[in-house]
Amino acid sequence: MRWIISTPSRPRNNRLRARLLPQRPGSSNTPRLYGIVLARIEHFQSLLPGGGFFGQVSAFSANGDCPCGSGQHYNNCCGDADRILWNEQANGRIQGSFNDPALAEFVANEPVCALDGKTFPPGILVRRLGSTYHLREISAALIATTDVREATVKNATQQQRVGSSRVTGIVDQGAMADRIIALVRQAYARELEPFYHCKLRSLETPQVLRYVEGSHFKPHSDSDVIDLDTQQWKKAQDRDYSLLIYLDQDYAGGELVFPNFDFKLRPEAGMLVCFPADFRYLHGAMPVISGVRHAIASWCAIERPQ
Image (cartoon, rainbow, N blue to C red; front, side, top):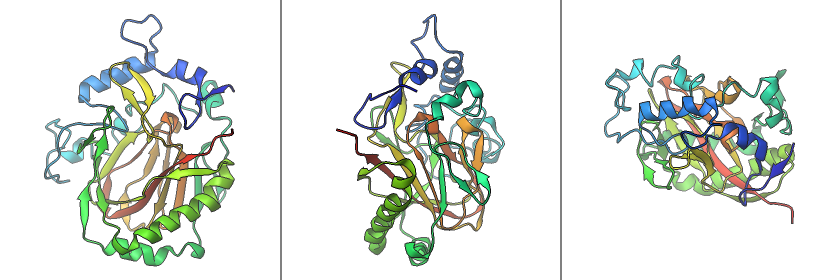
């Protein structure tokens, strides 16, 4: 498997990009996959995963019209977890999946994790964090917090927007901010670095995410966006790995979905999930049906050999 370094961050597989990236319209070798992707872009009039903008969201209600502008009731549109936009036809999904023998080589070098007798897709790390992480007090303080702002997404030019691709709250960390950073650093050192055989170079300030009834985050990449001018994935943020720490489990829905692996995970309180931040690991948070879901999210860049 031949890797090239296309940015200061995570390496990219040149053959993978050649097979999965779209060419300009009219090109004789435009992959069928991106014909499908581009048709969906036109349908939703969005700027795509990792920076989708489907229109302003002012007063979202899970019992009202869908904020994507379709005119349908939310529960029959983006709030319907059975709709193919969450997996089979997620924006940016590859044709097929990395479970297919023809595509499995592009994740073959990623380490494999198992927990409770279940083996997860290559590159996806799942752990239960023990008492040494002192999650209980942090979780209790964050769950009780009422200071919450609306989450935004970035488009291909890195502009922040409120959009219906991401209907999520960001919890103010208050007095817990330093403890959350310490928690995330501890998780990187104890869990991520040994698993991926890497060394942390930098991390972004963690976010605490709150998903209430109807909240969701459509499938997206954490480091890459599709540039509408070139119709190609491009590196947009200095991120190599993504990390999620879940704080509760008293909710229905809200599964973590990875469309390129046809894989869904039901998070539990105290569960850590890590994965590469590039476009292969397109992922989303499916709509919460009832209850409230909280998670700490962080992203890191790793050191490169000199």
